[in-house]
Length: 310
Image (cartoon, rainbow, N blue to C red; front, side, top):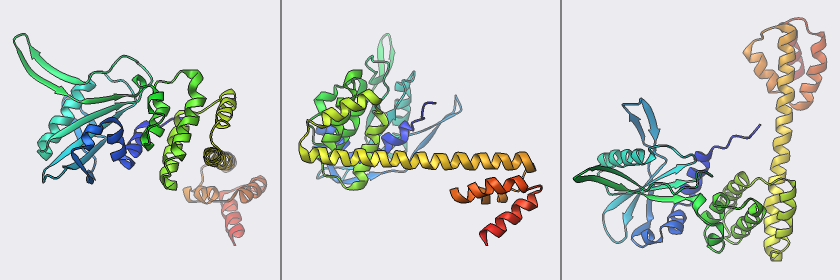
């Protein structure tokens, strides 16, 4: 079973945490005219499509100040993990409704992170007549599957370290890209929380199989000693998290099994009793599994729990 990935959450967390770095990486000209200290992330905006009855939530909206000026504008960023038809129209609707509500200039950006299609995505929405152009709405596009990860290898930017993992990568380069993402990350000297955010992002999108892991380890061997040690600290933490998750999942499966056996033997039980059972530690669950053989009623289970807790 394929593990589900919450792409929207991952990208929103990355961009909101490293907002200025994101803008600097892809739109350095914008950095020249904004005041970095003025960035305020606004509450989410939800729009209703009256005709379709659907609700849409704008991904990320930041209010920023023009450098050395008293005026503000908005930067609106959408992160899209799938290719959608008529997304250009949705971007225009976001723009129109945000402009109506805030009455501020808006700099619209969309980052496409899907693997396919590879064709270049639209960056504008138009309304034309044979004799008259009514509207041409433009927005900036970052299409990761059109970007070469090698172009970002030496960018001293945490967003580059994370997003290289979603760029155009030849399958045989996956282990190398993962190693290079981590090499760049450890040179940035981020605090532990930010380091964990980016390393988790990289590991999510570059899960390696056994043969790829061997190539990955070989690539690490070519790094400087200090870089090797820091990267291995990250890899070791991944391994420990995997072990802990495996243990937690094993405990949860055992609890699920015991609850099913209880219900099969006693029928439906009080939800509070079920919660009490699920709250037991692994050793207690194992003891309950043996004691269950002697239960005949729900009261037997209740008495066992009371006596065990006392």
